[in-house]
View 1 (cartoon, helix red, strand yellow):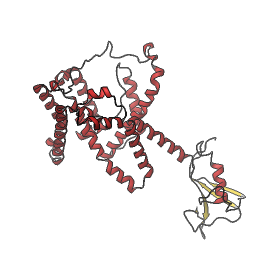
View 2 (tube, helix red, strand yellow):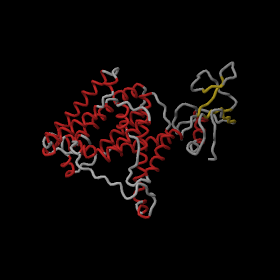
View 3 (cartoon, one colour):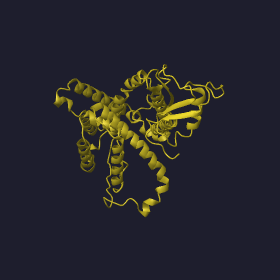
View 4 (cartoon, helix red, strand yellow):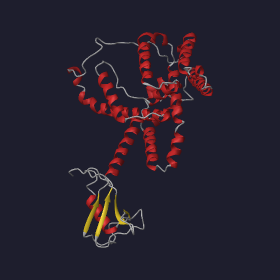
Length: 383
């Protein structure tokens, strides 16, 4: 996505209109070395190189705070804007920020539910739901990454409440877009030293002041430099992929690896939104599948004691021989797992805890007494 402006192919992109991720990759492979803008490409990769060098210098001198706190992104933005204005890169076909019109509207606060907006309710509902799901996922992933990085604890419920309150309050301000967390912005915030909510508040104030007072000074800012900054953050995130894959492999977390591969596949074939939504749906289906199969086992008595243990975990445990079957259910019973409860109890009664095909002949006699061990169960619903 960001490589297109770095090669100066934005104008051609508007003509070809590649939509999916793979179409954009093929678009870059076809045009990156034949129809690129040389000046734009040189500026982009020079800015990216400077950012990488400055970041490596900062990481080498972490004990010197006056070096580690140097805002390399701000330096690159100021220097590139000055050079662009001095040498008039816009005359060489370099896309610049240009003049940005600011219109605050007739009123700063408006009630969102009005006759002029209710007519859009039906056609925007599905899009709003999609934005909410993807936005919350993006926010919670960013929060978990920062929590693991800096040793913080997070609450998904509080994150959801905070996002809801922020967006409800923002709906009263005309022109406000839905607000959610961002993986890239959170990464940048952590890299420059932001640790508390004060960092976000300060950033918001600076953005507001920049929007109203400093935008004219950024008239000559090359857009390809902004793309280079985003690419730097994305590259730093991609460097974590080998470590995560290795961790999942060592933990034999094959389901997590499959979900990661599925998300990557659909993100490449279509786009990031489709990849996230598909992985979310698959995750929910896995949760329903797991919750629909309550853990059940047969208990047997340890010889010479009054202790009863699962016979599949303790081979020395002996079942009662008088036709009594003692079953331990380790889950709460609800509508999701009661549908198969009767059939699974029948299979335990006739076949035991070993896996077997329903067409096989029963290996056990029918029980005359059925005893349930429900010490692990907290609730049973009406179903």
